[in-house]
Length: 428
Image 1 (cartoon, rainbow, N blue to C red):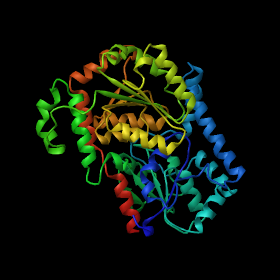
Image 2 (cartoon, helix red, strand yellow):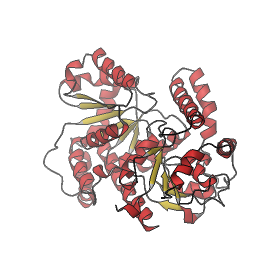
Image 3 (cartoon, helix red, strand yellow):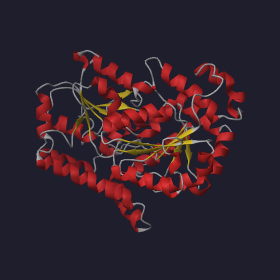
């Protein structure tokens, strides 16, 4: 993109979701992606507000695993981000206490330093979190303000106090989000159904990369040809002729979120699949993220189940202390991944790459809706008893169900979201 088509890309480093959503838009960025809660020169008072919110979220995400007390504590927190049922259709534009608190802090100067700094060169702002967009509008930012939504449905907190007067423009990843924005009172001219911004390195300019990867993946996901025999014309129409054999072994990536709340599941999964791993029937990629404690925990788990000899062979751990390097490695490894096992976070949209999702338990209302959306389009599968992973997972595999899930995600989900967003920015 040329210099005239650049923008300020803003994220927050609260978990991986908002940063992962911003990462594919790096070509659009006028500089490095800005972290609203952690940029050079941020005032201490602003940093403290953000830090308190992040620490509380990570605490709640982890305490949820504590029987009884954890679920109770999390349910109280989740009320503030709860997504109401869609039906019956009604006006949901009324503000809430959480929004009023956010705007009260902005009125007292939260975010003023960031918006004043960006106003010196008023490029369009593209924020993957709603609060920087609110800051920009409330503090009279002179450029266009866009907000990228990173879930399949959203809480009322994503929309300003007075939606009818707001000029924030939204990039919606799904029709569910688009319809929800209407219920919240957002003007139709301020909505763009773009799709979620998936990484270009996994798509290609004309989807040549994603189709090639899916062709090899389908061979691993349909070992008994149950799906391909019945739906060969569909595969040929959307993907083309499949190669004679796959270019990689059957591979599962288990991805742990930013709060690290899923890491305990790993030991049970590895234990159940240990024989298949040792027999070269399956490869496991464990995505630890950027936390050394999570990486070390996973290494201990691998040793505990007697699979240390499989490290760097049939077991691989992804870790980096740099978030951009982590995302780059993650996206590269996804090209040879057949099944993505994760909580239904923003990674739900990665099923658009033709990768079926095994869904770990949700954390929060938005992930509950992501789960419903994945089940709705047929690209997601609920995890079952981890102790018997070697049984139920391979039943799904041999019955062609995972191949079907891969195709459903590929066909149903918009894959060109990154390019669509770039095009809109370049035209306005």
